[in-house]
Length: 105
Image (cartoon, rainbow, N blue to C red; front, top):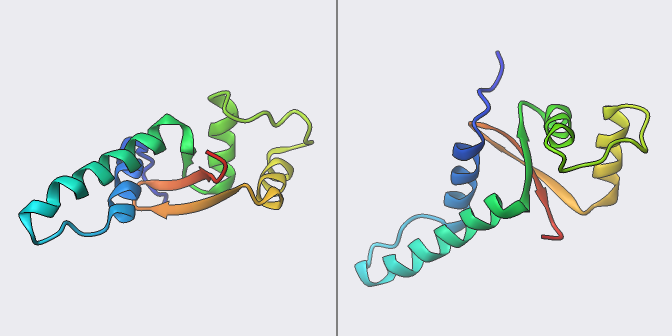
C-alpha cells in the first residue's frame, strides 16, 4: 500500500501539529490562528522542500521541481544520503506523505 501524496494537505497537517491544539479561551484563538497561518506560510514559502511517498521519492520530486540539484551525485540514493549527512534538513511523516524540511529556511 502506498501513501497518497497530497502536498497541500501535508503542509497543513504539519502547521497544525506545530501550532498544537486550539486554545479553549476564545481570546487566545486569534493568536493561535496567526501562529497556524505563519507556520503554514513558512512551509509553503520554501521551508518544505518537497513531499513524497518516502524519502527517496521526496528527493526525486525536489529534483523534478528544481528545488534540489542532484547532478553532483551518481544517483538519487546518493543524493538522499548527502542531504541526510548535511544535517541541514529533516523529514516528517504525515498521512499525506513524507515532507523534506529545510532547517536553514
